[in-house]
Length: 259
Length: 278
Image: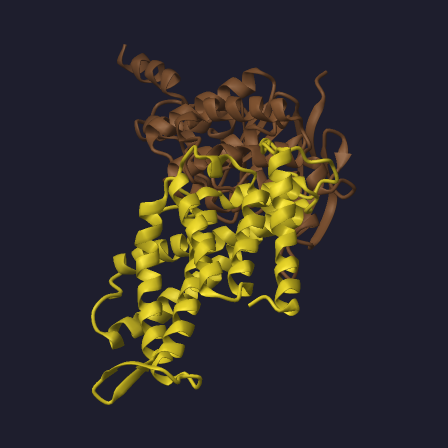
């Protein structure tokens, strides 16, 4: 099976080379701004900036494939429901038999869809250009304890590891004649003989891994030096601050009447 | 006289809530630079011997320990396992649980231990490169550990251990998942380490391999040492023959009614079989 939960796509673009914290701050701020900005024009502008960054990172095709699968059904559902049933609906746009669609509802649906598109775009832009291990490593270099760093890194590996173990158990049980495919009742019957060894072996593996970590010196009170050095620059630091401050700034602007 | 790497002095150990001792009255002295093979049937106490030498028993498992286990003169009761990890390394039977579970690249996985020990970046890089080269996984450096086969994972676990550069290596069936070529390659690595003065204690079921590689064998049964000495002595011991088994050459010589002591290695058995014919 493919290792890891990472969506990272190898590349050498500016975004790939940027400091993981810069990408993290930009992502979080972009998502926050998308939901704070009051009108579809502002949110769409943010979306276009994200789209340009995605294209610069060379992952546009990957993003479009994922975005279509996620965003298309959500957008259609939002338009269908809000355009028809939003309580603020006043201005009729068109009617499909007895179902009448209104401008207000469609506008609200469009704003929500563009916001979700920004959320998806920013998140995948980060995921496609940043190894999860790099983010936790960068955080450890900024003072996160190695124990917390390990928790963060291992949490990202738990699902693929469990799937890997489940696959091995399933193969072993199949070799003994257990039928794991076919009708729903048959698959349900196969569930227990798969789950019990999975849970037990996970517990054993956890104990053994805890031992193995001790044997490798995990937890020693020494200054840990990372093998990786992430390039940072004044421009990136300024960008991080600008993006981080833009969020409270936008909130303040909204309170002050930004429409 | 060379320094003692590992000393078991009247050691008995029972796991917590276990009705009986896993090992009983073990006394062994292992000098620096020795290569010891440990063998015996299931539940002989071989793995427990490794856990005691590493200090995981009793530090990790609790339980009742009598006697003392000294690694390089330091009692296991007083030295935490993480401190001992700078000079003693243990390779577990299951390589899947030996990996950290946090790294996404093979070379990063190998670097995990040296990084935990606070070594400098160039030192870590040098050790990672050397360890991967030794076990033949340099070409897998950028792969995800979970993408490796069982044999590759076992090599990775060994590389991760070698990168710590321990003075004493405890290996619990280090080649159980390797094919014959991979096994031969790993034993070649171990022979190189042994030649450089690393002390090796290796649990292994392949008796022929043990006889070829290890100048000293410890045969264990039911938690006790049944025999301890050169392979020729150990496998010509009647109780070992009955309860542990025999290398194939020894068994052939016995079945052919050759006069004892029976050979335990291929080279010796050739001579032994030629003599009566001549």
